[in-house]
Image: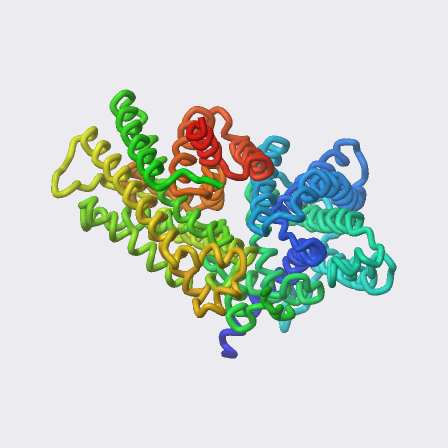
Length: 311
Length: 316
């Protein structure tokens, strides 16, 4: 065992750091997915596409900013602005034109509708951005690397992934929790989540809450994508893998659980990055092994509440 | 509401089969397209069984791809189509049983997404274990003998077309019997009120598991036929877009009757032959838009249109 650590300690350290930064990204997508599900009871299959669109928009915006001759630090606000833009445009469009028509339909039809939207958005990306990988790593280079002491070794790791990504994820987690618990709008959202009928009965406009929540969820997905763009190139198909990965997180945590999603994202992000370094063939399988293992023991997820079945 | 009776449906099926044979004679190059369409129709019939229970699987291409790879691996060892096909389909059914034992505990969102996740895992395993599956290059399938005979190219194509058509007729007939039986009726009960089913002493999980294994078997038949017809298997057979296509065809054809999947599959493949090459980059976009249109405005699909015509004809 000690020998193993001597040989592989450095790899393990890298895997941990990588895992934390990828967990931060997965969390931002998953938390939007779970929030939207909690309020609207619709699992948005197209949520991963919003992540991809956020990533593409941020990469384009960064390249555009550089072409204008703006300084390198401008790529950071460009990321946030792109995410806000994608959320503000796609969210209301999708909610009012599409989802609003299907709230009273069969669950299977709701799933099919968001799946159709997913198919459409996957090609919209190809039509706008083409099929060539896109990357703009200005932001990563801007922040440089930090030497992380690990045992006897030192791992140089880039500050963007080490500090910025987990920092933003934590801010989202704390901010969202405070927003939901402390503000009026947040409490209204919780009320609709808990009992839509009762909430409507006491005068809450659930239409407005749905619109607000969906737009916010879309913006979170886009933020995850936008933040990922400086670390990895954006390629077609990223939307599909993102939705299954974030679904794995949401299901592991329990549908609708926000703090749970953070822990599940950490488990799955670490599991996956450890696999990347030690058994690369199994990288894609690990998240689902974790999910299946959790669901076999707790079918409602780690933090989910078991629901009584409808009669 | 009056529905076309069983006799009428059987007549329509036979007339449709005769029309397909006539088309295959008249335009020999369409034989290939029709064989693929019929194979997909089989897989979609499986999706229809699950839709009856109100469940949708976004990952059934997994079973198509699995059976196709079984054919590709076994073809050099047992070069006989009539052995390869049942072997591959049974293999898919067995895999369906193992996965089904797990996913039959879940409904709706979980059911759909679990299937999607598992199929994506299978896809990436096919892609990554290069030394075994040759990755995205895929494997060439040697044309097997049919009933012991080594056929010419044309004879082989006819044989596969015949096998596919025969299988579709038998599968459609069996599916009708199954859906009318108590086990099949239990599926509709899962969709409406699952608890009532349990109160009657019927296990909803067992009813769904049976339908799931049957759907995996049907998808396996489809995969085996596709592998023997195209004679080249790649991981793309199991990609999510392939699963999406199956769901698309099911909704397009209409889930109301067993003819729907075949109607949908033939319409889909014929349009695709002409459209997909020119519109490769916007193909999913078109599929998605049509899917939305059908769900929102014509939820009974192509079969619903025909059913309405038949009813009007009978009234006149």
